[in-house]
Image 1 (cartoon, helix red, strand yellow):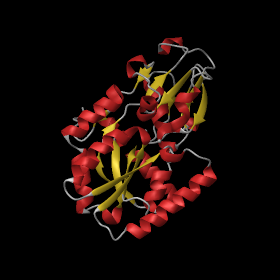
Image 2 (tube, rainbow, N blue to C red; image 1 turned 90 degrees about the vertical axis):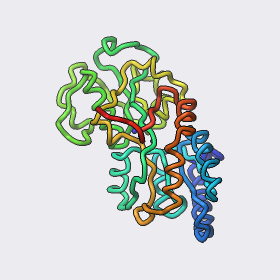
Image 3 (cartoon, rainbow, N blue to C red; image 1 turned 30 degrees about the horizontal axis):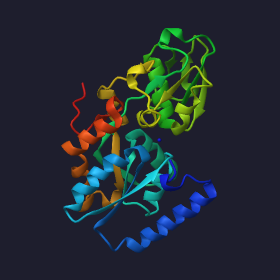
Length: 275
């Protein structure tokens, strides 16, 4: 369900300059086929450090670049500043490719992070009152996922669409008011709204315990498009070093670190049996 570089959380102008430098540096390093740059959410850094150590034994120099929004990692990958990224689910990638006319593809599963409703004001769905304000992510895929969560909770009904938007709400008996924000900002809105629909990685960053969620997404066969993926340019989908990185990620050591970092906010997806 989406970050600027953690090393310098700075204004957009300075970040743009920094991204340009990264891309220029990347162009200069392309001859080094054993260097693989991966763009990730900052919260995933400890997990990828485990991967870095594993692939180093195979002669691969894994460079980890941290982002704190949901668009820059794809932009950097499309422009050659990264060899792969790992932060998004399939629906988000499909939407991004369509909007930006890019050809980025999944090369492996990572985790699935159930979406959940959190609140500072209520403890269960029945406490939601008329005209309550609900924060949801503003990108098309996560907005749809949040609305589907609200539908499964019995709060609204939607048109039968792959990726519904607020315009596709057909029944809203409580007249809920939807506040759309960047997915990374939803957790910060809780003081101003009744509840917020928060992505798993954002919830983990905010130190939210999923056991305290008002309502949580269930993982089923329908969850497949929401599984997070490791992504590369289509032309490089069979790159041997990239496959080694994916294999190192999909390991017991990494699974152990994922549990340590995310607790119940994430589930390993490469060995997941969906029912």
